Length: 83
Image (cartoon, rainbow, N blue to C red; front, top):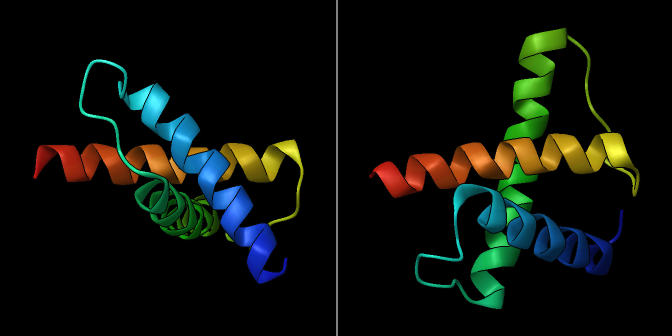
């Protein structure tokens, strides 16, 4: 994916992960933080996917990639909220 696609994908993933973790009752995060959480969460999700299956995950605009990225972003947000 190109840089702009990563930013868009990261923003959507970061927003969705914030909703899953419980962002409505907590302080809202900004757009830049959502993009960073989404992109770093996607990388973390890819790492977790590789550790679990032994196969590399390539990120395209499809539902499996979206699910793996959200899983990684939710794990990242949960770790950040515990700290």
